[in-house]
Amino acid sequence: MEKILVTQSETACPPLDAMLQAEGFVVVRARRVEDALGRLAQGAALWLLEAEQLAAADAEFRQLVNRRCCELEVFCLLFSSGGMSVEAMAKLAPWAAAITLPATDGGLVLGRVRDQLSIRRLAYERNLAQARLLEKQEEYRINLESASSIQNSLLPQRLPNIGGLRFASRFIPCDKVGGDIYNVLQIDEDTLMLYLLDVSGHGVSSAMITVSVFQSLSLQTGQIVKQRCAVPPYYRIPSPAEVLASLDREFPFERFEKFFTITYLLLNIHTGQLRYSSAGHPAPLLIGSSGEWQLLAEGGAIIGVDGANPYDEGEVMLQPGDRLYLYSDGVTEHMNENGELFGVERLVRRLGEQRRRPLDSACGKLVEGLQDFGHNGRFRDDVTLFACEFGENG
Image 1 (cartoon, rainbow, N blue to C red):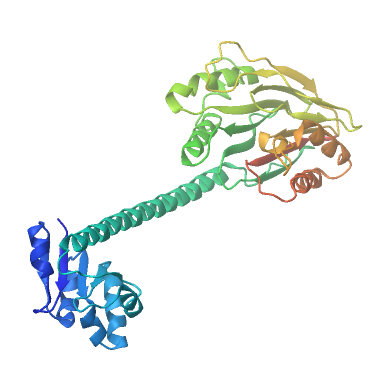
Image 2: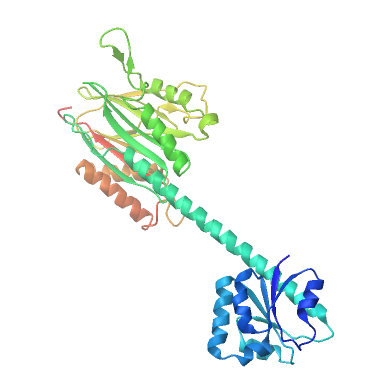
C-alpha cells in the first residue's frame, strides 16, 4: 500500500489521517507545511496538503514546494478545511490537484486519493516504458554502428592494379545497415575472383553472416575458392557453380536464419575468359566497347534455401574495352516518390551512355542518376556498384 503524507492542522475536520489509516493506507503526519517538506523524501506517493497553510506562505516558498514535489515525483492534492474554492486553490498552486472537503463526505476524499494514486502509477509506468524505449534505441544505435564498422572493414580498401584491368566501385550504405560487400582477389597468376553478395536483413546479425561468408571466400581462411590436391600445381580452382553449391551447404537457413544472394565470377587475366554463376542475385551487366550489352543471367536459387537443383554456369570472352558491372538490388529497386523503380532498363541505358567516360566517372554518373531519379531521397537499401574494365594488356 502506498505511503501518504498528510499536512492538516490540529483543529481541521474531518481528520484525514485517521480516515486514510482506516482504509489501510500508510500515513505520515506533518502538522506544518515546513515540517512536511523534510518528510517528502521518505517515500511518500501522495501529499495531502491543507490549502490554507500553503496560502499563508509567500510565493517563493510555494515555488520551493512545487520544486520539491517535482524532484521527488510526489503528487500533491490540495484540500481546504476552511471553505476555499477549487478555483482559488488552482490559482494558488496550478501544479497541484484540488478538492473541496465536505465534513460529512469522506468518500469524496478517498475517491480523489485513489484517483491521484492511479494517475501516479500510470505516470510511473509511462516513464519506465519511455526509459526502456530510450535504452533500446541506444542499444539499436550502438548495434548499427557496430554493424556498419564490420561491413566497412570487409570492403576492399584499395582496388588492385593488375595488368590492363581497371576497377571502380561505389558503396552507399542505407541507414539500416545491410549486408552488401564485394571483393576482388587474384587466386593465381592467371585467375581473378570477383564477387558481390547481399545478406538478408539488417544490423549486427546480418553483418556477422557477411563476415562468415567473407572468411569462407578468403584464400587464407577458406577452403572453397582454392583447394589443395596431390598433383601439380597442387591446387585446383573450383568453378563458380561449385563455389555456390559449397556455400549453400555451408550456410543453411535452418542454422543461421538468414539467406543471401551472390554473384561469383572467375576471370582469366590474360585471355578474358569469364566464367560466372549467380545465386538469386541481380545478373551482372556486360557492356561492350561499341555499346552492345548482355545480362549474365546463369545461376540458381539464393543461398540458404537448400536448393536441390545444381547451379547453372555461364561463360563469355571479354574483349578489350568491355566493361563488367556487378550491382546490388539497392540499385535497380531504388524507388522514387511515385513508387516507380529505377529498374534494369535505366541501369543499362545510363551505363551505356557513359561508356566513353573513364570507368570511375561512369560509376559516379550512375549514382548521380539514381539520386536524380529519387529526387535526392534517402536510399532504403545499400547501393553497391562494382565495375571492371578489360583492357588491351589484359
